[in-house]
Image (tube, rainbow, N blue to C red; front, side):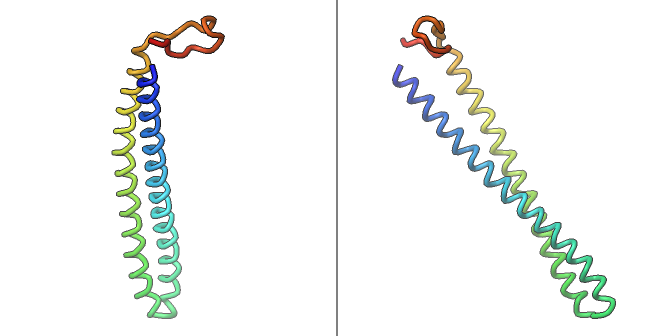
Length: 119
């Protein structure tokens, strides 16, 4: 019984680590995409300013390239997160199969909820 509890605790620890990793990747993806959006808006403003100040056009080009690179980084973070999400689903399915393979004790046996029976 104790070994199965330890296995469950280890599996849940891995799931928590996986969720934390996924959350960090999503945060980075949002940050990159929002940075890209801000850069694109500033590029538009600089192109308008470029009508009066030609140097602003060069700055707009550089900013646009940086914004596109930021968007690419955000997409790569999204792709990376999806790969981790798919592996997390497989891990959770294995854990659920392990938990369901053990018989459950009745709630009135020990005055508690449906927990795995001790073997």
